[in-house]
Figure 1 (cartoon, rainbow, N blue to C red):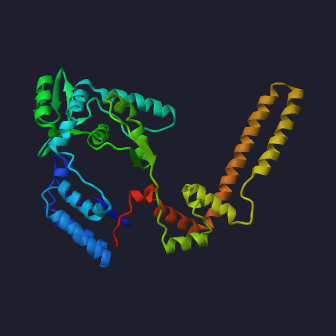
Figure 2: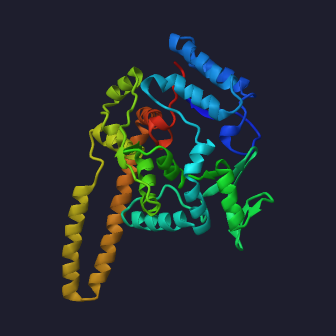
Figure 3: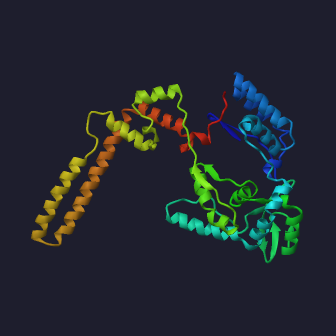
Length: 356
């Protein structure tokens, strides 16, 4: 599927096996709809032709996608390879066998996850005991170990250790790394000095360092990539009218609305001064009560807590009442946030080059 503004364009297909091996022959309807979104500008027409040629001239998604990516970025030096190529998988075959049989990645990544969580990072992926799929045409299923045999889920395929080694040696392309082993494979066949990724991707790669070290595969320098935000003229004008800066819009929606209300009313909506006065008053009450009976100090504290809670609730009611007077502006703030941070995330995760 692909998101186009507020619509989701979906290729409905009942399929199994590796995604890259799916045939795009029944994509005519979705291709036609996508081309409609690209528009009739010079760039739109050019991209329509590129997309149509890529997805109608090939028998599988991998080849189609490689042609599309090459057409868009090949002139900048981008090289596309087929990671299923047996010659490439053969370079990885020793690690495939070791990791399936000895389950090193599961151990090392789980340990790294624990350490990262202590530092406040939320793991992006969790390893399985075996982090490889077995793959043939129409089949891509996890490999699981059961009483010394290595079985392929939802099939009758199984291997002893010896049979597994022979299968990997003869047909390495049938073994597909999952998300935690794919970077290791990537760095084995195409070593990099650095990996440039987004925030979640960098955290994900940090989980893998110990596993790389175990297999003596060079771990690239991790670099946080730049992100950009697109603010069109109409949105910029709306921000100006609302008095919101580009820095302001990074606050969460509730905070943004509360701060906007407080800065656009002529009356005081916080009761901080009153809270301070109340604290001082009850401190004096507590002191006087203590002089009479030491046990009364607890009653004074309880009364103070109740009074402060009443003040806090009243402050919230005042803010809600003021918000009701500015429904239109607050709705515009919500719409701005939804446009600039779709589903609460960065634009780059949902924006598309269509329409052109």
